[in-house]
Length: 115
Image (cartoon, rainbow, N blue to C red; front, side, top):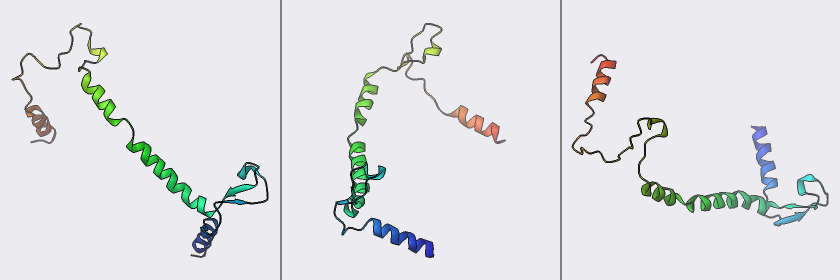
């Protein structure tokens, strides 16, 4: 419990909103790219929300429908490995009254489960 309390105090000290947006540390090192300045508490609090907002904006503005429209415009084709007989695939068969009923699926299910 002591370690958790100590951790939370450290986080509260790092993310103090009373600090300025950018503060001067006085020391130059790799952490502040040798400028002597680093983000203050306000900037550290705002950074995760800005990244989440930017990611959400990008996710909502992706061209999701462009790929769907492109797929609708193209005709259905067979896989290249199945074209050995030089017969093209017809998306709409010559006999539209032929359909699937699912009897084979039920038969195989019963066969597997002993029904």
